Length: 639
Image (tube, rainbow, N blue to C red; front, side, top):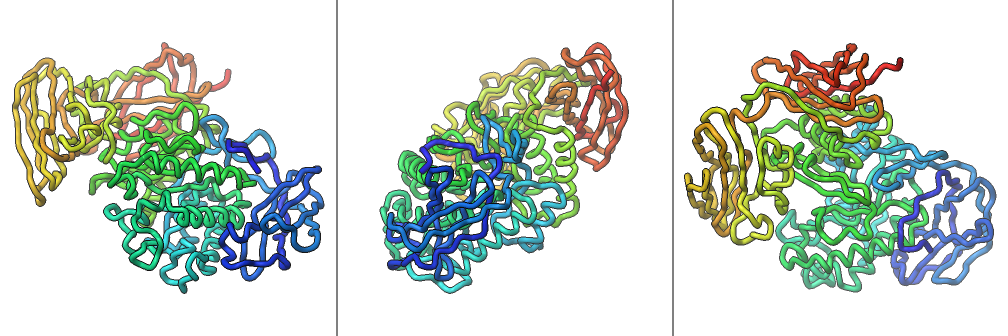
């Protein structure tokens, strides 16, 4: 048994043919590990290692891995009692590529020191869209993607307790057809080199108001099950037993595959009934701690363990990396506004737009490069796999992935301070970076604090949820000219909201919204030249959502951010240009060494790439004729 703490897997293990124990008896439900705890115990260098076995087609099977090639002897045990004759196993096939963590970064077992692994891809939670499941995996491989997430969801016949198109199994047993479908899933990932997060449970199963499936759940007492309420999923002994049976079975049947990056306990657990209706984070946290410890004690393959939820909640103590989801008005703001965790890896497992009409390609791009410059442990991963058939979508991935591959170990790049000299006069479009989450920053000194907008939720809360936004939003800025702020309001809660806007302490706008059917509108606030503070309050009972706050004339035309490793730097320059116009700017960095630099310039907004040589003198470099979104890779030439 492993201790209750993370242990990285060996750099190389050796696999053998599938081990079958036909003489092991079955009592009752073969998938109930409390009745049939079957394992294959092997003697390795004088020590006994236990591999959980699984029931399939009338036999018990196991997939042991070994530290060295050779012959090994073992026995099948059921509930501590040995059954059958000794089995000799020949381990000959080397197996590498398991994902493990080292501090805050991921690596792959490769037989040496561990190849760096920076996950970048899109979700593939269930079959949907134009592409078939395996066909889409092949496309992901062809374009360099190395990561995905797959749910054990009932509507896609991947939940063994709850198939929708296959025959229903006996109560508490597993559907053989579902198990075969999961076999195909793992095999597809292995064939295409994808690493994926195996998501056991999702919020809809135990929710009545967020993507609710509770009314159809077979464990619901109204459907002949044993749970009175959805909240009992986390405490009922029978539910806990069945959850562990599924987890144990998954480890036994598919755990030997290096394609499984991690066991993900829950998708978006913040939306389950226990939290939505009861705010019972401690019960949900205890469930995560117990399940994490259970996996750690059982999994001989040492996979990572995670979940997905709000990052600031008390559920991460037994998780190996943190993973949030976000659908804001600004993907870049969300990602750049989320600081890396100091102790374990962190990246966003789902991102997409909170508003319609935005470019999916931009969401992919901002998810990748926002995470790179923020110092996350992987890209912020695009959710909408059913939109990947649109023109340029996979090309957007490939272009960025090709650059990432050319950089080598992405995790060695660190944010560097730079100065951008650019004409002023552009509109600052402040787009909140968080969706339905708590705001951690509500006072901004602009434009300096513009990149911190990822800490602000677009849901401006009223008196009903002051804990999510305890202060009004305050924006301080200075303008050489008079102008007009535009506060673009997107949605209003049917529960009622009241916006009050103050300029330099004087109320300049107030309005209430009640009921449903309110249309988006814009609040215009005129200001004279000079320094100002704009304050936005919601003194109604519920929320209104702000899409953006536009302040004219205070933003440089171009802004830039840079990360460096050694003599190589990556810069992203965003410019407010329209109608075919171009921009120019000068970027300074005191640590740049003078000399010639190989320069690759990618026009991310126009699918063009240029290669040239640039000379840096006095720590400065000037860029002319640049478009709205440009990525620059600088490599100092060796002397």
